[in-house]
Length: 222
Ligand code: AMP
Image (cartoon, rainbow, N blue to C red):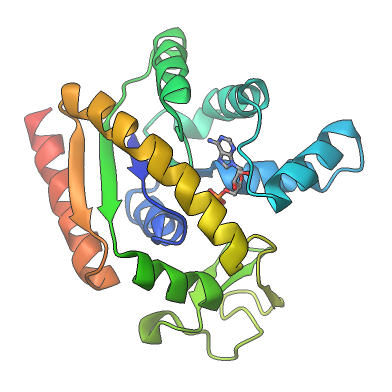
């Protein structure tokens, strides 16, 4: 399976798509945000820095992000492909990732860009609930993504939480950061001919089926 990268604004559903594709193709879903949130739980210097920066929607220092990513990509389960969610977020990260791929003898794969209206995003941000235990994601404002009980995970029965950064103010800051980097990232991958645009305003099923079609075609080309 090809490696997959997502370029999408906050709350466009990249985490959800990544999780489903990960189950379908049996390849790991590597969420940079989740790995950093995990590291932020520690009460050491790094943990405190991460908590502060993430609460203010600031991008984490590249050195930390690269270190975390490199260690993860070296793991055995990444051999047959993997899905990156939340990386690269900047052109500098995309360039460093190229070096990392060479070093680890891995291929770039495909890049999915999710295009979506800002109003749709705002409604999703305020409704999103996540399970810290199993990683499941729900949305109280999207009919097809409702949990059976608004505060409990359907999968594992643990409590659902609203992420600290899922509020309008933080969303606005994260969205602006995304817009600043989006165009350069898209140009970067367009030149490499690995880029696919998807209409994120469509239903989850439609977006997923388009992704699966692209992945099948890419497989055949290979
Ligand atoms: P996410 O779960 O992808 O929405 O990411 C949540 C937060 O983690 C972001 O607002 C950043 O503070 C941090 N983060 C995630 N991915 C990256 C990255 N590639 N580079 C820097 N910071 C990141």
